Amino acid sequence: MEIPFQDLKRQYTALRPQIEREVGRVLESQRFILGPEVDLLEREVAALCGARHGVGVASGTDALILALQAAGIKAGDAVITTSFSFFASAAAIARLGARPRFADIDAATFNLDPETVGRAATRDARAVIPVHLYGQCADVEGIREAARAATGSDLPVIEDAAQAIGALRHGRPAGSLGLAGCLSFYPTKNLGGAGDAGMVVTDSEVIASKVRLLRAHGDAGRYDHRELGMNSRLDAMQAAILRVKARCLADWNEARRAKAALYGRLLGKVSGDLRLPVVAPGNVHTYHQYVVRTSRRDDLAAHLTRNGIGSAIYYPAPLHMQPCFASLGYRAGDLPNSEAASREVLALPLYPELTDAEQTRVAEVVAGFFRAGRS
Image 1 (cartoon, one colour):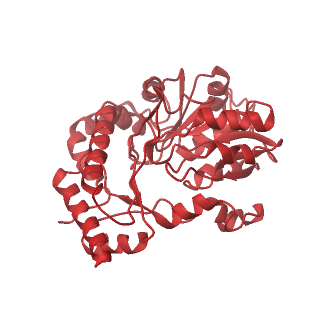
Image 2 (spheres, helix red, strand yellow):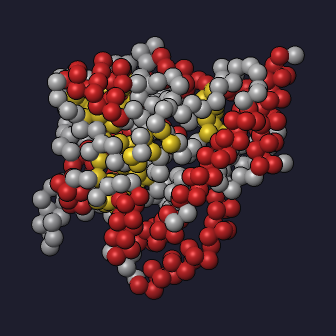
């Protein structure tokens, strides 16, 4: 049984008639950039995230850059974020000429540890970007309090919710916990388009208006450029596809949770060096990825490959050890939890269309690996 790590064709097959109808409607309209289709998606996603405003942009990376710029982050500012994330979380900071200030993660949830945020929050810190990694919200309230205690002021919190649309913390949706939330609609996300797309969600009229301005070269209309922005407008085609898929998101996320629970039952009895995902109190996880950890990660990944099962490593190197950030002066050992996670994490196949038989097979192969290791 060949089991791919991800299989987007299954999702497309189920939705093909609706998607093709909506794409055809956009082609007939010949309105491809922004417009009414994007306006509708912005309202629908903002409501889903418990926010007053949504502003569609060209990618999740652009959402981070524009949200930071709208919040007043500029060259020389320090912005605290996690070292254990996709590169864009820190690259967005650096793109504005600001300086990423890396904090360590909680070893159980992989999200920012408020205590380490407090240590990183010196007087030159101007914002915090917590990343809701793998589909689970970070402890935003703890992060905010730690930063306030260290700096004596409330730092703007810009949520990187690229992996967590639909996740909840104490009943509040990801994207509504800070000043602004940044979403990615990359094709493999829980809500994914047919290419790059993103959105900033916020309760702030000021932030929303600023992002709308910045996404169109800072043009207030008729070539009146008030700010130095960028070309980051959302395509109507992507919006039409995403509106079809958004109607399925709640069911898809519930299916992911059910499949995570099945993995928990199947793998919970595996003895040996295997740790399963931990859900923090008050959180509702969306399992963008189902990530286990083991000190034998590379051997386990190779074993799965030999047995026709896909897996992936998110992420094999923490950001503070990336060559492009060498000038920041971090060294091995500075963020031990992030460094350990990068050596040990492995994502197993998990998507709404994955069958129980496929999951059972994955679990059997994983269990066999650990049984062989004891013999």
